[in-house]
Image 1 (cartoon, rainbow, N blue to C red):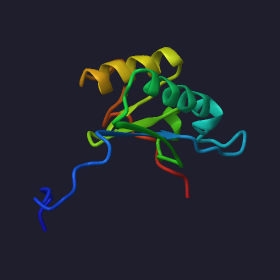
Image 2: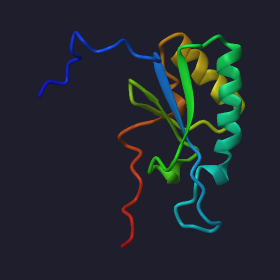
Image 3: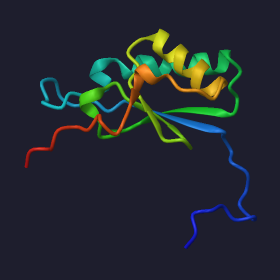
Image 4: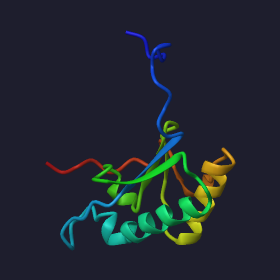
Length: 122
């Protein structure tokens, strides 16, 4: 099976899809949670700012656990699969402008292959 799109595939509905982890664990959980670190407010802000910036072809969605809890709040932008760790509304603005408007990256906020959660205890 090929990974290339077929000629009959419809065009993408959105140019980019942003998933913001809003998973919440109980207080004191060893892995923490993105919601406890403010991801819900950042998601709400990002949705408003994306509209203000005219990013009509970008969808900002809430996600359940993205399994990078230790680095939260976390988000991922598809189709590129680029992960970020925004902490403030200013970080969100920078990601929206650099990544989604200009096609660049915000390297200081990116999670990379080096950012691997510790092994889960059994």
